Length: 387
Image 1 (cartoon, helix red, strand yellow):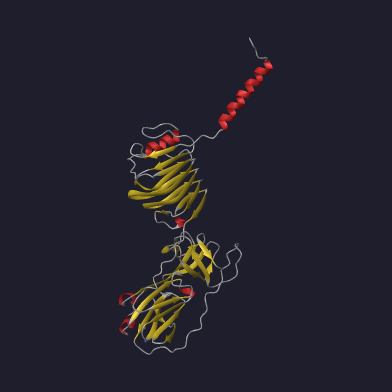
Image 2: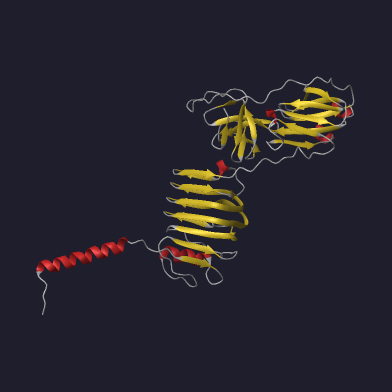
């Protein structure tokens, strides 16, 4: 009978050990776990965490993918935390979640959620997601009926695509300590409310009426100044948004033009560059306010000499030197307008993403702007400056 020498035995044993090490190093194939009428969310998470069959859910294996095949309403009770790397594919379905718990809580793992809508059953006053020592990536995720977005501790949060988390502005979605945040949300084109204002009124902007200037016709209540109302106004238009670019408004008849300046509170009646174009009375604006056409002497036919907004050369990112007056800026996220350049500043308004404004001054982290007649400060993180 053939016998192995001691040297041969050692070689065979070494080969077996190396084979086992190679097998152990092979990546574990991920499993697809489908949430359907047999497998519910709670059991799917348990199957993924423990790599075991769980009631009607397939056995997890490695970095699993949970796939939603229909709208789902998880049963009451605590959902297990995500403790293994996981991708949740929503397939544009909706989860109707219990308002008393976050629909996803992550501990020490990386959870990616795609193409999902979460609607809480009743107003949730706490965070929609909680992440501790992990990562959360949200892609095309919409969460409704909640007040707070993501509560994180020492974690990395990424939000992108067509996502809307609790209707919060980008700089208010994530709270917590440590970690890092990467939020890239789409910038929708500004709504054009000026080209179709009606009544024969024509509005023209330097960069077009879709560039961020906004208009609405107002009556006596909108004017709010009795002396102007008593003069017997013919028409009035409130103009705001990116007015600093230069906006012309022409009424389809002649008359005198009054301007109610939105930069003062209460609004004051002041002068504005007005002129006549054929049988139209026109005004040129570079600041927000209400343009009022009243009976009276028509302006002359001399046109104003205007120029588009100026931009300055880029300045250093260091220090807190104020920017040159008239720095055009564009918001890439919804931002709170605060009374002071601090997170503790009183919130006095909301500046929507896609707004075009001009900032007369700034600090390292804040821009001062005037939006809809209110002057305040917005954070720099979701602002694109052209200066």
